[in-house]
Amino acid sequence: MRDTDAWVTGDNAALLTDLYELTMAQAYFDQGMADEAVFSLFVRRLPQTRNYLLACGLETVLDFLERLRFTDDAIAYLQEQGLFKDAFLDSLRRFRFTGDVYAVPEGTPVFENEPLLEVVAPITEGQIVETFVMNQIAFQTVLASKAARVVKAAAGRTVIDFGARRMHGADAAIKAARAFHVAGVNATSNVLAGRLFGVPIAGTMAHSFVESFDHETDAFRAFMASYPETVLLIDTYDTLAGVRKVVDIAKATGPDFKVRAVRLDSGDLVALSRECRAILDEAGLDHVGIFASGGLDEHKVAEIVAAQAPIDGFGVGTAMGVSEDAPALDIAYKLCAYAGEGRLKLSTGKPILPGRKQVFRRVEDGTAVGDTVGRDGEALAGRPLLQPVMRGGKRLDGMAPGLDAIREAAIQEQALLPEDISAIAPASPSYPVSISSKLSAYHAEVKARVGAKP
Image (tube, rainbow, N blue to C red; front, side, top):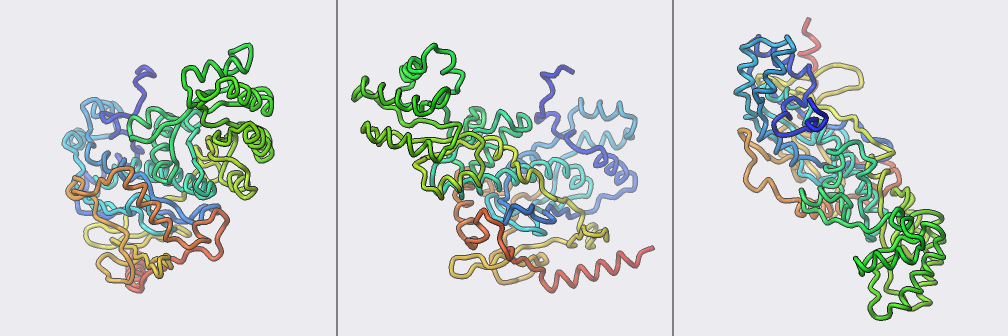
């Protein structure tokens, strides 16, 4: 295989699974086990630097489940491994996901030990999809949660995703831009993400463009000739000298000067922005904004905003693109029912709540005050968060709301959070999540049954 063929596509995505999913499927097949199973996806504990997570990635998962097929090429590869029987491989040729999915809508704040998603399907179907489901929900939730913090810190100022070049792979850069849009980021520099998801794209010039000219002023004029309403990068050599050159060009250009902003990418952004603002204002260029980038995260953005620096927008790259402070989640996808009986394991520190579940969020006076995880079918106080999104392997009508609608819902859902939970500082106490008495009793019942087995 050439490297140019090494991409995840609709034709090979069925093999994006851990080997043990397939060996377990073979064993299920051998044992004639095909009853309905329930698999629950949840985060055991939040990262220390997160007060909540913003659920994301569901649409990617549903699209995968609808399209999932084992091609002849995939079957041939598995046959070469010598691990699978012909009858099982023949069953994979006919494999389709036929199950149901219940999920928290994308853009919903979620907390530890709350199901983000539950898959109800014949056990082999639920097992084989585990790797992909975990991969996409975990990754996109991590990045949406990080981006939500950056947007919060920016306090209404523009935030643009600059992170593609340092993210962990091509698919990561695409899905990240989607997750960032859900979280409220205004635009991305990633052109392909813009094409695929309809996310606004933004970007102007790099230092290399300025360096390619003998004189900085010539670089500015050349770029303005192509893009009059541009943002000029002024810190290639000397930031204050750069902004003065912009002023000189504005005076020489007159009414045709349409540059929208200057960009700072290094140095003391607070001090430099103030000095640049003074120079621009003195020249009558109060309409020219100041945009900042360069190693920013939510904490640096918050410091800039708190200092009342005259910065109108931020380009945030690596720290948001890889969720630098919390790049992974303690996420689990666990069997919690099979053949009509609740299931769990008794491993220390890794509890599983058995059976199908529901999460109820209580809101009082416009603020969420607590969640309760209960058994499916319970009628508890609050709004149920898990919604049916797929039946019989097909998405339900109205369950594909579109990215902008998801983004708007995310804004509304986060607005319900208590201020200390939505803040970027660690919250104490954490958001309250309780287990219903019926679910607790059922957990004890299943635990006793499982523990009593030899």
